[in-house]
Image 1: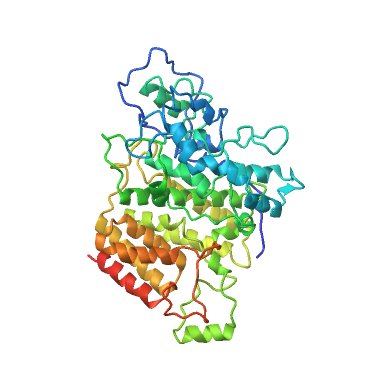
Image 2 (image 1 turned 90 degrees about the vertical axis):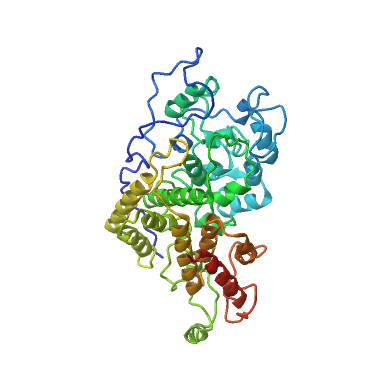
Length: 501
């Protein structure tokens, strides 16, 4: 595969082309809306041009203070470790984070033997010293709150893992004022770089910056090949397992599974496209295009068998078609499925999405892409991102109620059924796993729990691997552990019955 760099960066300051958000912002704290007597609105700071409200996390204009600045017992540091539940006591966020949240261990993870080996394979760490600072800070962007280094060139200035400010924004400008009533929180969000994590949409986008990637952080195929797990992020399932340090306010109607799935679909797709933009523009030293991680792993990682035997097995119907022809990589849809779901929900013409995916497909082919083709791809991405960013009426305005177009449970079940039928026809792990996650969002009946659990067990990667198991000519297609087994299809029939009108 020929690697092309795009020498002309097309005024790519990501997200600056998008319109200025107007309207109201969610107030995170209860109580009256009048201004606290001790609180003064700063006049010198202008609002961000930021459609998702997460720009402070990637282009910080204020200093990071560290999680310890939030740990006072009168603030977020006590009196106890707290309980991860909807009734978690306010004020226990810091001890709950440091004791129960895996984000607090992310810096230690980067210091593990396995991570050190990855850094050495990538020639980031050579003879105990950092040889590539930019690539090292790319790792720190998701394994630590701040990427700023001390004078030794290896230790972060704030070695804490992914702390409070990694999601809430650098707190230098609002740390000593955000507790002075709801108006102070509103101003901190509008002007001082606080991220409105009270909005489910903003929260999902913030998560995706690390769990998918962003303009200042890129977990690419080189890093995967060096030993880092591939990223398969699903916002709804991650959030369900997350030890929450916040309370859902009782006056707010809970976000339903279908809404949360939809939020995840849209924000994942936008982050994936944003990451592709930065790769096309070679915005980071280690970002190049085409990038293998934008394509399905099985396009290249397929069983090495005799081609004639393999072809004969397909002809007789004994082996499902491989996901793609070698040398013609299929676009990885794990994060881009939202493009198709948004078209379906809006009832819009899917031609724009099809042209974008076709352009991505051609860009990853063996012949590469010309500069003019890359410019055209960039323009398609920009147009599609504008559609995604306008899908919710005001992403930074708090709850999603009535913010998205109507999408009924039955419409979703019909969509999910079609996804399962495509997965059954292709034998593609990614399609089947996405259909499974879509089924979870449809609130399946209790009777579907047993076949759903069996399906989930088939999707789990084998121990010590980071890839799914695919049928091979030597494997028994009746083996219940295989994706294409008879029992898998029997369970699928049960699921399809549930999804029927």
